[in-house]
Length: 416
Image (cartoon, rainbow, N blue to C red):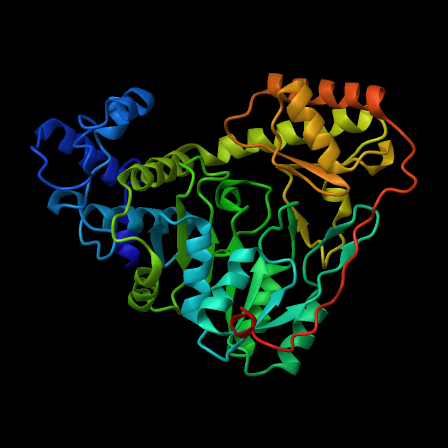
């Protein structure tokens, strides 16, 4: 396998190359999809373009099959595994929700316990509904000033493992939505000492695999499985994702689990976008994400200079529940100007035509990636300064976040 890895050429994009060859072949389609290279749906073709609908095709011999890849899709998966430092990679067309659910369903059966932070994505809880596993929640620490959930403290994970020695896995967010990372190397080591798998939800950490100075990736930390949202910071089309596994997980079994729920009609638009985006990251990712981190740091300085706002960064690290921080994340605390984050979110969208990722009770998140430019950041900073001038008010009486530790009395599946 190592010799094979050394021969892989990251300049290749086998699915994209196969689709280009297919386009030149002028095949007569008596198969699905029914739009027949766009001819049957001219309005759709006019909207998306012939280049797009012409490669919205069905699985066939020269294009391989996502359910059981043996040629170009298999090659694309091998290249992805090589680029991300995994033993195997699976191309996923059901979003990172599908990746997370396949990861949990691989590790857990009905009645099994899985240790996880309470601030997991709903796809994790939905996976427990599907398989019947029982959560053991590790309460994340909360930053009281910002009102955000942080990572898992090492001693809390250790305590959960000691109290639930029959748990089959530990799941970690790497990072949270806000860019907060737990200590993945320590958590992997704890899980493995106890004979448990370590799973990582890396929906917001694709760039960790290609960034100098960014937090450690799950695969580099020794995790057994990781779900990676390529369509977020990786640049692929929405709904495309990767599921990465380490050497101690059986790839054939994972494929069986994936095929329980993933479509048998994998979109070649999504697959080719994964292929092309992996190539882009492998060849240029380090330079691109270095630039993104620089832009985010510049924006933090400018926003903090406005006054009233707090664009937080690596200074919130504490060596444990904030073991590391994703410096590409531009998160801004807004309560000190008397506005909830969701209010600033609405004003930016409705009055300034600026669409940010989200707002909550006290914060907003502007998601920066390889496609952003300095002039757009200047526009955001100017808008925030103007919003402060126009709308600032007394922050007394604003709601604050409240965290209630749950008591698990019934499995999510039985509750559902």
